[in-house]
Length: 388
Ligand code: IPM
Ligand code: MG
Image: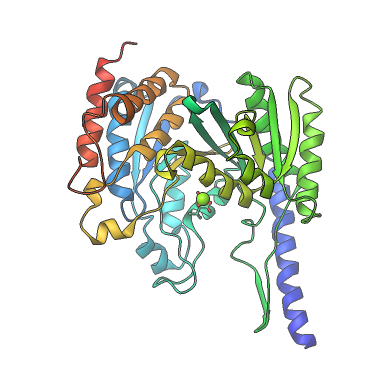
């Protein structure tokens, strides 16, 4: 009995040490990279698993097309990084193989296809998610997910904390004995303040009036309680922005409430609630396949589709019919993030035309529709018809 408790306590002590080290690192962080001050911006292209390489390749073609002059001038370099596949990860039993991580660290921004996330019972060993590991390794603390449905008055931007909460040590819980399993959730002052500031700064810059924090601080008193009170503290530095707070359960309901939901603008959430609420929100816009997601840190940023790797499509020989629009939308966010705002706007406009207005080609995921390659060509043709 005592041995069992001692062993669990030892594991817990190790987690505490790791988290204290992480806080040290956060305290040494420099400020955000200024892309316009770099000689060259390196954009990493990471295919991932399943349909990932097929759709990412299409988004890559479009970005190369839009940034051709910049590449010719040597201002932008694309770097294709292979090897972030489940087979390779399992081979070395790491969420990101070391050589891939070294390549990622040579980039400034990364466009990443979906990666398979194993869980117990899968044919793969239950290793940590590559997504989660990349967010931690590159300290991509702000997961920014916009959802817009103009005809319904929906214009939301979610700031999901991306490195802490239930995810911080999500693969390091403790099986104390056969009957007792314990996971841990982590809130730090540094980690919460930086996501809160990112959300409020965004609100100020984008002329928003309100920021909404979402927690379950009435029940998860210690970590969610700390998260909420730090958001309230940061809010005091932004007197022009109104802050309110909701619990996650009622918030999931209020997103469906047509009268209430149009009042929300910017959200701040701990990691797991952000994961859940952004899938619900994306559903109003047409599903997770239509949303893009930015993972922003001070030194690195990564942009991804929010859907999975769809291994079934690959098994059934349909990867070429996979819809690249979500990763292309991630490409829009990448362009805007590194300062190519006009190119981002053109691409967004072309996506809207191709997906909603003109619809000359439709991707259905099967041979009843266009291939991702044809769709990307259609986007590039459409871009050429858009004035500067
Ligand atoms: C997301 C995904 C990931 C997450 C998975 C794939 C680990 O659901 O990006 O929202 O839970 O963060
Ligand atoms: Mg998710």
